[in-house]
Length: 248
Ligand code: NDP
Image (tube, rainbow, N blue to C red; front, top):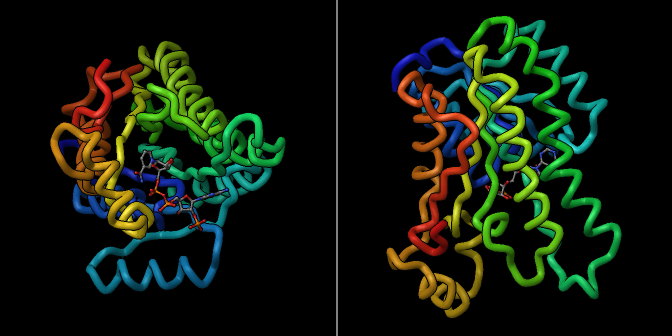
């Protein structure tokens, strides 16, 4: 991937299934990669696993749903690395339930972690990108933000909101060399999805025209392309990677 050597990349939730693949791909492309984490022990284990695989990843503690936490992280990374060039807003959670049964707590948790976080984190690094006249913001949304999903009014609203944010910010930053895009993955074969009972997984796969789950590496490759110089003309886009499950 051209133009990524020496760039600083921050991946929120980089220790997760898709996040880990994104961290590896960006590191392979020459970025200095930083991942957020919540749980100290889990993050140290992840860092060691990455080191064993030959990757020197940096980690920073941050609850992306907290503006204060994100502000502290921003101050730390701006001082330590001179800013962030590639920001991947990837951290996310689900708390499913039909709307009639959904509590205010389930709604707020999903909206704050998936959507408020995009404001909280991007706010810390956008000035630096604009000042350097180069930057990439890549938001990991979801197929369910495009088509809706039974039992996920909270998640679908948050993920659709991410793309609204993407289009608006892209217009504000385009002239300054900063692109902003969303990726909307379909079902990806992360540990979580692979842990679902096989018959349920097969029902999911039956709805995917290519006949399989996506791979975290396929999302990571798209992230790296958007981050590279080759992706410089793409901004304000929402790129679907769902094996044909939803076409629009
Ligand atoms: P994982 O659960 O494996 O990873 C999620 C990551 O987000 C974890 O590292 C988790 O940290 C982190 N995280 C959660 N809450 C917070 C928080 N408050 N502050 C900071 N970090 C947090 O999920 P995936 O890798 O599967 O998903 C990654 C992204 O892709 C998500 O946004 C998800 O919605 C999206 N997506 C996933 C699909 C799939 O099929 N897997 C399909 C479509 C979209 P910790 O483990 O420490 O809690």
